[in-house]
Length: 92
Image (cartoon, rainbow, N blue to C red; front, side, top):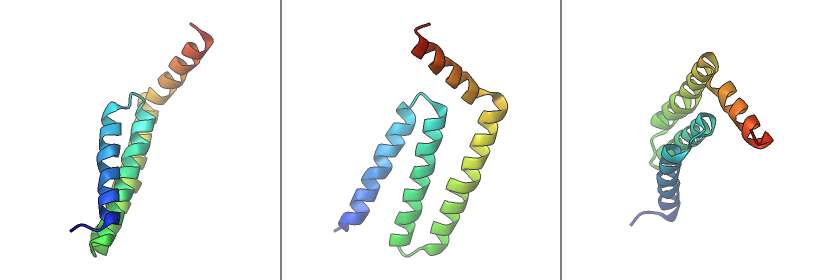
């Protein structure tokens, strides 16, 4: 039988995976993806695999998150999303 903590964390993983797929804003999807990695690293800790937990936290949250932010900044997606939000709020 699975401990309740692991079941809750696995449920959070499923919900965050679905949320990433359904989110239209890229910045929000990146933040949800990074939280997915944090929860995965917590699960690795509960499974007594601290080396995998550290790797998941460093690569999944740290390096991947930074690379996603840099790429989105360079291609200008985040500015386009802000402009679209501004236009929709102004009624254009």
